[in-house]
Length: 302
Length: 290
Image (cartoon, rainbow over all chains, first blue to last red):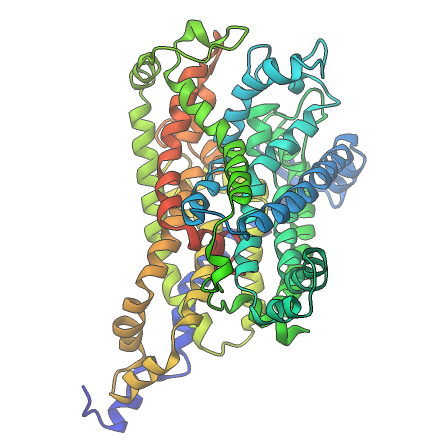
């Protein structure tokens, strides 16, 4: 091995400029096939009339026009917006608080940490099922012992009330994702350098000053990146809504994903749902681009 | 500011050695226990429901103590859920193996080489991960109908590549960047070709990164619902898809749902205990090293 001449060394393909591209090629090819091709197909469909699964003729912007004249489309955007605005800030604040608690002198911390991952790693469908049981009708553990006993929702169950179902869904999301926020912020906090804290202690800074002047600014980039990841994820919510309310009562919890699902597989309005998919996709691409730039600049992580 | 921020991710040793840090605090420990109990209580309750007899399940007030029953397990077994369990395992395994084989070289190349348009390629990869699955499932459904890939393991594992391959490349790349490049250089001085450097030096060093990232991919495939629901069928039916089957015309089989939910939780519990640090890294797309 070690006696190869320079000539033999040069002839090998793996030492040419093509080599890195050869390593990346299969993955890129697959990703193009499984995501770019479906996207282009959806885009192509969105400009056609589709009747009973048969692709008809080119109809320009018709599908898009129908979509933006459809109240349910705008409703789904506001459902997603309200959902994100309730869930993500709560997760964020509770997660930050939890991370600060974990960061104290907690006994047996390494034993607690893995347990806390459980909600965030659970299948969303199982999370939905779990809360379906907790909040079920009149006998669910929470619906009977808490909501009913304290007279919070007289005469109705939480997922049957169009005013409260969305809030309940957002709180389920908070249950699932707060632990993740907590552990991510905790990991970030643990990775902070110790020396500024020692300096602050020498200068006699109190806990509040240390948090607001030191921890918060140092953690900001991480908080931004993780907050954005959660916003992006929360917008896509499907599984838990599907099993808990299927978008109801009425359209009060119909997120864009649920709407697209119903348009496609219940109403067979495939052209319109393709248009919806394309719009959502483009919005995501813009969001991801922003996310990528922020993450790269702020966190030096990617 | 940004030069400071690099430190955020380059973990420093934790300052645990100082004497005042060594003593534990009862207050904070209790608070942690309360938080953990609040978060985990619903999961424990789900476990209890799996063993709770039907006649005690719907009582008001809630019955807290009961003699455990295996009725729900028997119902689930009789309803053919072993087959769904098998499909779940097989599908998650196939898709994870595909991801590892295709993704490992790519992750390494992205970490080590100057590729033209690397940032754009990377953005593309991130984009495939972030896209809402509902946007993909509609075209997939129509394409798979034409190619007769509906309700096959191949079709579904291809669909799973959309989220797992990009995830795997993204996270494994951050593991690759942690490897000291000097080892590879030394091997090349010894006359190894770049490819044998990859096979004999990089892969052994990456082993734990590959295993933990692959386990996360397994969990994501295991947990997946929408693709399996729309693109699967009677041949390929995974546990998450089978759960709604228990909402029958005669009513909801609550105890049975709890059983299936707990079974679906098993790989998650295993992963949680073995992979804590990698989970933070994984779920933050490599932004936090955990």
